[in-house]
Length: 164
Image 1 (cartoon, rainbow, N blue to C red):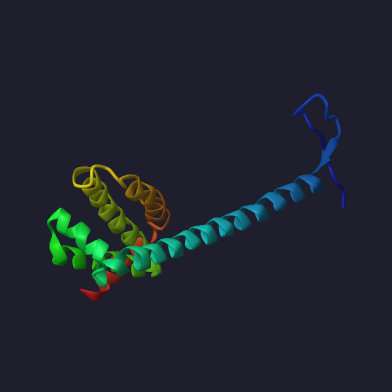
Image 2 (tube, rainbow, N blue to C red; image 1 turned 30 degrees about the horizontal axis):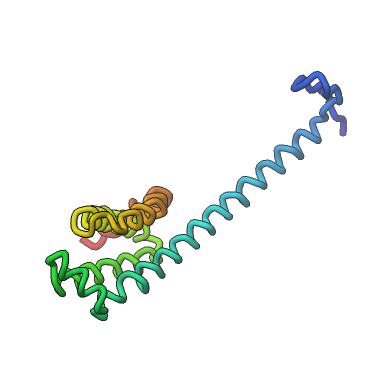
């Protein structure tokens, strides 16, 4: 087996020849690193989804669904009462569960982002912006999830068409 050599012209300091075998092994190393990086990114995104699902399910929806006094007081101040509190709590819990279902995760992240827009507006208008940053902070990973998992939307639409 013969190897061909070609001079490297990247910088004058490097005048060592590069063999086709070393170039091929370099391409292989880069090609192998990409799937590893992609796998790590998918795992990190999945971890963020689980954390958000836990947050929306336990820290946000649960106090509303059990009518914790602080949640009830906040919804009374908004003027929505217990019906609004239970509705928002149920929507948050549904979104938290849907974040963990692969075919629903993009839709769930989009819907929860919409809830966060509403929460931001309420924080500004009713509570004088006291915790207005929280919904904005939560929207960043939700929008990232909605975009990264957007391929599942086609699967969802295809499934819905088969059902109808």
